[in-house]
Structures are given as structure tokens and as C-alpha cells.
Amino acid sequence: MSGPLGHWRHAEVRRFAEIDSTNRYMVAEARAGAPDGTVAVADHQSAGRGRLDRRWEAPAGTALLASVLLRVDLRPADLFLCAAAVALAAADACRKVAGIEPSVKWPNDLLVDGRKLAGVLAELVDVASPPSARGVPGGGTAVVVGIGLNLTWPGPEGVGGTSLADEAGVEVERDVVLDALLEALAPRRRALEDPGGRRRLLDDLRQRCVTLGQLVSVELPAETIEGTATELTDHGHLVVRTATGPREITAGDVVHLRESGGRRVGQ
Ligand code: BT5
Image (cartoon, rainbow, N blue to C red; front, side):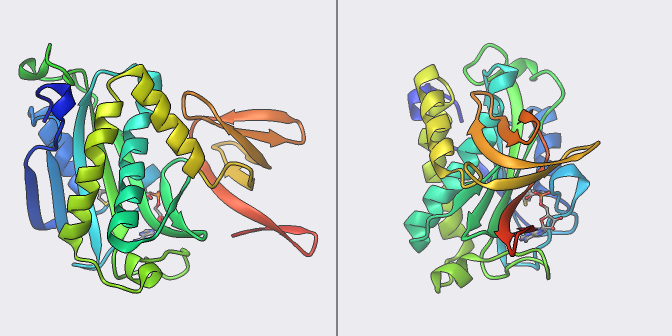
């Protein structure tokens, strides 16, 4: 909830045994006027969303599946920081409850040694804020940020996923992870509100971003490019140095490559 910004705290947590998608639900609730900081969490999703119309899978009770509504006053170019705030808060939570340090794969996956532990999906709610939210701090733009974090199931066959239990060797309860994530989100959410805070978020993202310095292949709608990821711009775009010069990527699917026997293969 917004209140005085120095005291940002998540609002109500709405719990579901079964839902189609916590992101779908929270986008609808945002349109209906739900307050900043409202959280939805589910034991199971029947239609969990990934990016680009992909699916997020998790058998019931094996993952943290949650979405948080952020109402922010940010320029469009800074909205990517909402997803970054949640990804970084989730990484903070993993350190606190399980002693592991996931890194961020551009744009927002959490990886442990190249294995995908969590995925983040941010959706911009495409209607004006309800009258009740206008003119109050955080009343500007509604963004729903969902996270799927594997607790005991490493994801579908063949996708190279992992779970907190596999990495840390202990099973941590879903709500313990959620509480730690929301606690870590509070300062990161406050950081969105001022220029210095936003710079710190970006610095943290750059530090945690394992994609930087890597040989990557990026699938774009019309082509696939290869090169070394060299930079994360102030607007969250990835700069890739290719044989034909630098390319700035706004959205796309990145594969981290490695050299093997003179060939480049996906990791
Ligand atoms: C993401 O998409 O990584 C974003 C996932 C966001 C899921 C959360 S769950 C709560 C909230 N409500 C929703 O409906 N969604 C959000 P993407 O980068 O497109 O990755 C999707 C791909 O990851 C799939 O095509 C699979 O290959 C793979 N995948 C699916 N389930 C996985 C899992 N549990 N662990 C690891 N990889 C998985």
C-alpha cells in the first residue's frame, strides 16, 4: 500500500488453492481499482503465463506462484524497473531463507549456475488508473509483476530448470519464501520513487546480471543475432556486440552460449 512512501508495505495477500493465472487475476483486479501492493498467491495455476504466450508449469504445491500489483509514477522508459525490483527482491529472499545467490539472466529470469530457478512476467495494465487512485502517490501506472519460483519441482523436462530444494538441499515453505520476498520488496519498491533509488536498482541489476560479458544468441522476430552482451542501458536494454556492430535489444529471448570444440552451443 502506498501511504507515506517511506512506509511502503504490500497490501492484502489474497490466497487461492487453484486459479487460472495470478497475473490474469491481478490485471483484472487492477482494472477494478485494487490498491498498490495487492498480492495474489496460488497453490496451483491451470493456465500460468510465461512471456510471449508461453506457459509456466508447476504441479500443485511445488512452487511460489505470486503476482503483485504496483501503482507507480514512472516514465515509460523506467517501467522495466518494476520487474527488476521483484526479481532482485526474490534473489534477496533466496539468500535469506536458503543461503543461495541466484543471478539474473536478462531480462528477468533467476538462474543458479545457469539453471532457471524462477521466471518473472511484468504486464502493464492498459487502462487509466481508477479515479480513487489518481493524485495519490503511486497512483500513476499499474504494473502487475508475477513470479514463479520453483520450490521442490525443477520445471518441465528438458528446460534446464532447478528448484530451491535442489540448490539449497532444504525444503523451505512457500509462505516463508513469500514473506521474505515481500519484506525485501519494500525497500526496492520505495527505491522506484526517487532518481537515486532507481539508479541503485539499476546498479544492483547490472551487478547481478549474469548475461553481461556472455556470448549470447538473441532471437528477434525477424532474425537471430549472436555476439557478446556488453551493457545494460539506463532503459534496461541489452547491448550486444556483433560482428556487424553493436545492437541494442529491447525485448527478445536470450540464450547464453559457450564455445565447445570450436562451435557455439547453448547452455
Ligand atoms: C517466464 O516466462 O519466465 C515468466 C514466468 C512467470 C510465471 C509467473 S507464476 C505467477 C504469475 N502468474 C502467471 O500466470 N505467470 C506469473 P518465459 O521466459 O517465457 O519462460 C517460460 C518457459 O520456461 C516455458 O516455455 C518453459 O520452457 C519454461 N518453464 C515453464 N515452467 C517452468 C518452470 N516451472 N521452471 C523452469 N522453466 C519453466
